Image 1 (tube, rainbow, N blue to C red):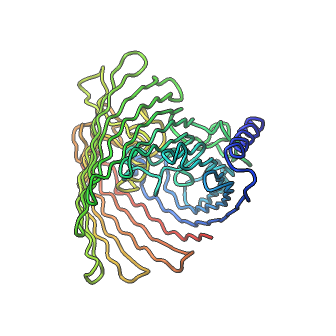
Image 2 (image 1 turned 60 degrees about the vertical axis):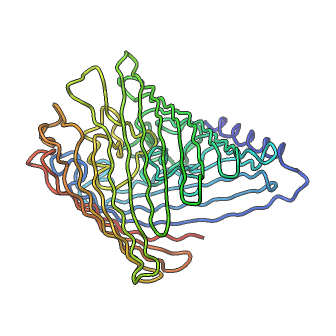
Image 3 (image 1 turned 180 degrees about the vertical axis):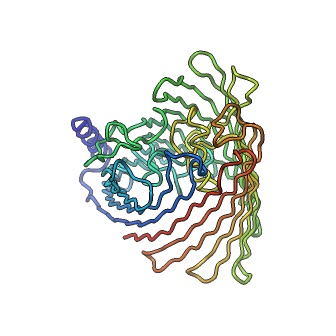
Length: 453
């Protein structure tokens, strides 16, 4: 592993110096961040029905340092190191009496940027990189999280991305992705001694060895309207005895904004096949309508929306019609539900949270700015299943209804300074008849402080 890492670094530096003007002065930049969280899970995962998932009360301390070397205006190298240690104070323990997970020190990002190649028409980024923020794709419906197994410690993809500008308002991203279940490309330092969530003392990052190719278009048709068509080909090689999946996804995202109003929507169709011939297909999409009143008191902003994710029909054993979340196993519409999905979707996505599927969600939220530094957000989700479960664990699932339940949410955000911010989050899930009558309501609570240099 060490020799592979040396080869990768040497190759990246060689390419950088070859492309860049070596006579130019190299410019350096660096920074760091520190994030402290406490999380409380009450009846999360199994809704109070499982003895193997006790309640959790734990602290998370994520620390990151990053550096950037710019060899020219066109060529740069970026690297970030991250660790997220955890300390458990509640009933949940790692193993025996252990409460501290010191975590690994990992290469969270490591990539080369080449800007304005081929006459300014192409940008190229090669290496470990994030697809969030300005480099992301819409609301992250298909691409946002490459490492769901480590929570929000990292989001990276091992990828090569070329952005081809066809016109000032039209571009196409071509992306190749390779995300193994555990990191085999770069070393992790001081690997954890714990076993929960780890394979040979390396963090399990996804439910399978995943690879994919993406063609993602972005077209600004006017100041108000943007269209983003895409195609994704993904392969999944699950751990254990599950069959390999080859899956195609065709979709379109549209975003419109005018006079404070915004409408965002996306729809995609999937088709593919497992090794052995079983068909896999699915459909998914969402629509969100909202408005922000910048000149009104408290600057209120509201959103209402609907999400549809197809479910597997139990009456068609030779087909699986469940929506596959591709590279978006993240807290998309809420946080608590991603953990309750684990017992339901373990056979498709492994014991990793966020396998969004078999879902109808009616959503509404409102955000108020109490001051320039403080805002609050209140939300509500009504969740249903697209298909009933069949033969699922009777301790948790009723197997005869589709009402998942109700989930109200509340957030408080505060910015102490340009470098320090904080938030409080609470979600409360009231299970419906989709679940067994013995299930209990669940609480997810979090507070956070974050400092960035």
